[in-house]
Image (cartoon, rainbow, N blue to C red; front, side):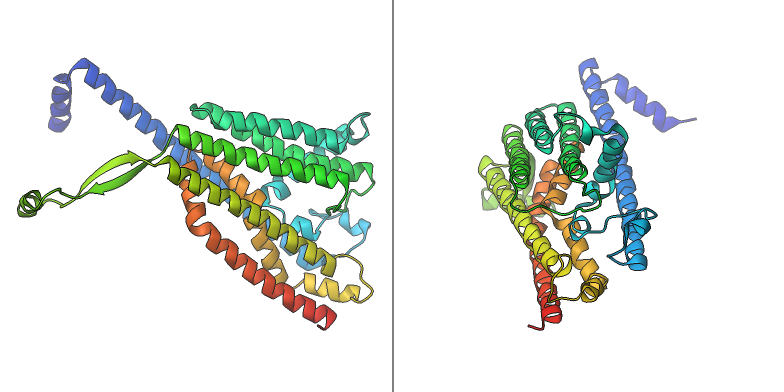
Amino acid sequence: MFPRTTLYFQELSSVPVSVRASLDKDLHHGNMAGCEESCGFYFVFALVTFFVWMDLSFFDELGEHGSFYNSTVADQMMFPVKSIKLRMTDHTDHYINLPWMQFLNDNTGLYAVPGVTPNLITGIHFCLSILAAKCFISGSLGLRRLGAVLYEIRSQLDILDGVVFRAQQNMKNNFVSVWGTMGYLIDAFADMCGGIFVAGACTIFLNRYPPWKRVRNKPHNELESGRKALSFQSNSEEKYVHVTRRSINIRMLLVVVQIIARSGFWDHYMHSYVELLEKPNPDIPRELQSEVLSYRSTWVVMWLWKVSSADACLQYTILAILFDKLWVWVQMLNYFGPLELAFVIVVSQLHLMEVRAYLLGT
């Protein structure tokens, strides 16, 4: 009734037990890998859908109420704070970590607990970044995934130190950076070290367990090439070899340089926009600031930094580690990252020049 199935089992029965066990193991791993690929796809799809929905809600509320409003109106909003820094903050921190940390602080009164300071929380997330990096260099995918979870907790604590600071300073709805203060410098140092730990751990892991690449070998002599041509075979043979350590280290160095550049440019443009559009300025009427903040071009530029910041890049890296796609992500970042960053910088600079000319008449 099922001749092909019967034939398959007859052929399989003639295979040695050890070989059959190896085939069954490979088939099992293949099925598990396929299941993980599907789960990863649905997870990323759900995450992107959630972020798109939150973006639409955020900018719809921004278009309805504008950028400046009183506390009574803010209490009735889904997003009571719409500062420039928040508009340029990556999606994970803006829509997941920040609301969760604010809820935790408000419902536990953490900011009022004796001895709890922003610098203490910064020290804790600094230690967590070290533990996460230790997990990232492991050959066990389970431990690397644990590292991804630890680093995400570290990111939440990085948000929590700011939440606690604003609550202690009675600045709950003032989501801005306090440039130049000791707390700002300590937090910036811890964030920089966290990024370095991740990059260093990824470099060590890739050197310990180098990824494979496909190469083609051409025939060594004309006789072999002619024989393959007559038999309609390809003149080159494919084989898989490990990526060299030199190539890995160069690519990871370029990734580190790119993340540093993203961090610097993000901070530069955020500071520039805050000075022009958010801080009270006797030379710039508040109405003009509100008008420019409501422009679609302003929304687009700030959204581009939302997905292009160093923090966003690190979040993508953690996601790649979680689904065991680190080398694929490193290659993508090397090929497309510089072009994408250059595009965002050019668009931001042109927009900033136009805004400055419009507001100051220069």
